[in-house]
Figure 1: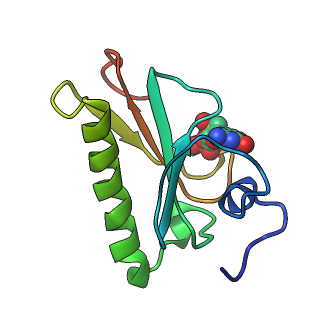
Figure 2 (figure 1 turned 180 degrees about the horizontal axis):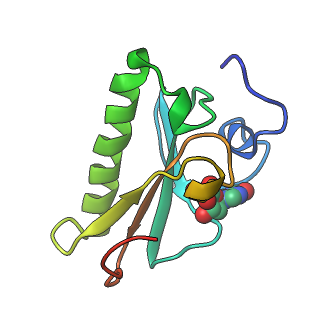
Amino acid sequence: MTNRPADCIFCKIIERQIPADILFEDDDLLAFRDIHPQAPFHALIIPKKHISTVNDIAEADAPLIGKMALRAQALAAEQGITESGFRLVMNCNQEGGQTVYHIHMHVLGGRQLKPGLG
Ligand code: DGP
């Protein structure tokens, strides 16, 4: 995959330079467990294409972002939390709480999450 910043942690996970508990992989996406889980199930879904922030998503990336949502749905089904519920989060930039600048969708579930955000 081209355009991988040398210092991107998630690109390194894609390239297997850093280990991760990988849950799913295909040509476009990787899903793995978050290293600091905030819920009994906490996964991150990332595109293999390096996109730094939600602000950098292009029109042509729309199918890729859609695939991330569908993968979240599939992971939730695997975890048996489809009906009980789960939360999807994408943080953007500093005030959004983004710490890794390679877009990722958090999938959180397995406990009662607090209503609301922030
Ligand atoms: P955010 O705040 O939305 O940028 O979330 C980044 C998440 O990435 C955070 O919940 C912790 C997780 N994370 C950071 N570094 C690593 C890592 O090396 N491995 C794994 N599995 N997760 C990581």
